[in-house]
Length: 262
Image 1 (cartoon, helix red, strand yellow):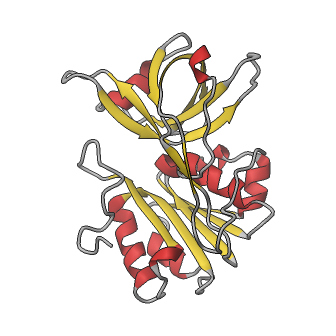
Image 2 (cartoon, helix red, strand yellow):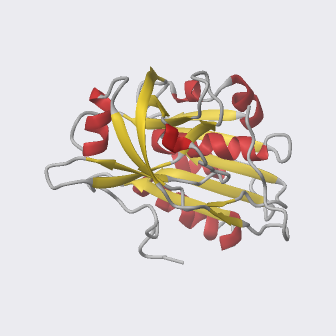
């Protein structure tokens, strides 16, 4: 299991590393079905020379064709291997596949080895913060690549509990054996579990760090409870709406909760 660095400055701060911004022309080497909703594309090409990604929340910009012209979507690199099985660098990107309504999922539904992609970034890396007693990670299918990176950042350093939520009963298959052992995973399926109640049942103290990524509407009540009843300060939280029901191309940099956009 590859690992990622943790901030070395003051506890609970997050160091930032900047990267040279480049657009890379890459080719699909292989396509692998991971779970019911996730497909992995392994990308190769000479343009991967010099690629770096150190932070659990890093993202690259992938460009797709659409009826209105090119559109860019952000993806967290699932894994980068400077020397892969192809004897060259390899980059894994994991896509949620749910039909052909959007440019990205339409590409992922149809793409086979030999297809090409334009990939830019990452612009920089924010390292995982140190100084917490335990870490809770929450993610649906869209956040699983980043969740894997958080698990690897803290493995052997800080106890981690991972809650995998949503409609995909096979999400646990996205973690490799070492990650599953390091993360103490729990699957919370929609319709069988209430995500907020699952979070309320966790061991959350002033020394807990909580990261989450998924559908914005599912995470807003979780964030409100963590800030309100649980009393966690902003430095203990990193919650992101990667998508929103009924909204195309949601900006995950926008405030998760517009009513409380700190």
